Image (cartoon, rainbow, N blue to C red; front, top):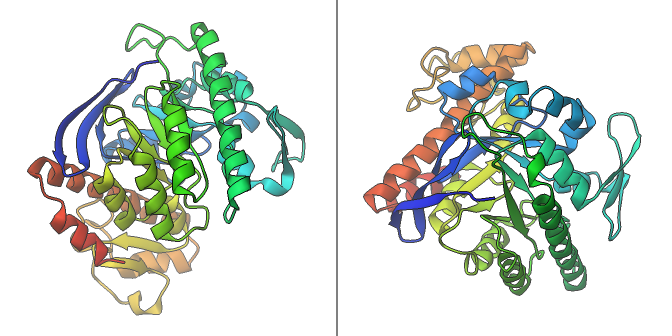
Length: 378
């Protein structure tokens, strides 16, 4: 259950480090593209490798429903099934059942929900989430948690936090009892999988600190901060991250789940966050939004119909090196599937380039210029 982590340099609170997994090294701060159903939407695995995505994220809820974790395990695990030989993380399914709140019911035992595919009824418990994630075989897996909705009053936030803490203990107990079922990794010659605990507590700093303290007492190899980007103002997101970071160990990786736009991830990394993931770069790409050094470019706009510039003149990705804004607009308004693919490749390249710039700035010991540059893009 170890997750080796070393810190090579710091710039104020920001950390430059490495996480070691059975499938390779992750340089931090890192951004994880989201591959919900075993696929980062519209982008083949070889392109992800060209972009130097060091780790991707898979979704337990969706993979459980289709194709099913038993089938994935039978076929050698998620790495083998999707032909991805680099590190991978799976979430617990907690956020998905939260987002399907109209189709789910939460009890002490777990969450009963109806499939968004066929309406069939299912029960996710901490133990079931662990069983599924062990079968999928990702390098890093997450404890089952309850994501607190926004807005939520203090009483509701505390009860949700307490539930998450009890579920974290159950997740860890099940994982410890079933480590012999973890898939064998040929690369490392052993069974290696790291389970992370998740900090909740709604939008109350003292609850966030308490959640962090009590989660740390369970001694996970790394810690995540969940329940953010659920509708709260950005200032509140930063306040909750800061509260949790006060408590979380400095010698273990710290992961903020489900964030954010490029300027946000730069800011969170400057606060001391090591890992982040978000669907934003892939989702907005499918709607024609390009994220660039000049700000956000809505490629649908008629102003780009004759624009011969690359999507981002300062970007060296394969899309910006070859195609014009006029062509990308033509593809999008024509409904060509290639539009979504090219837009997504660029957006992911921009995010991953952002992380490389962050790591370089931390090594130099000064993030001020980077922070100012990204702030001006909003």
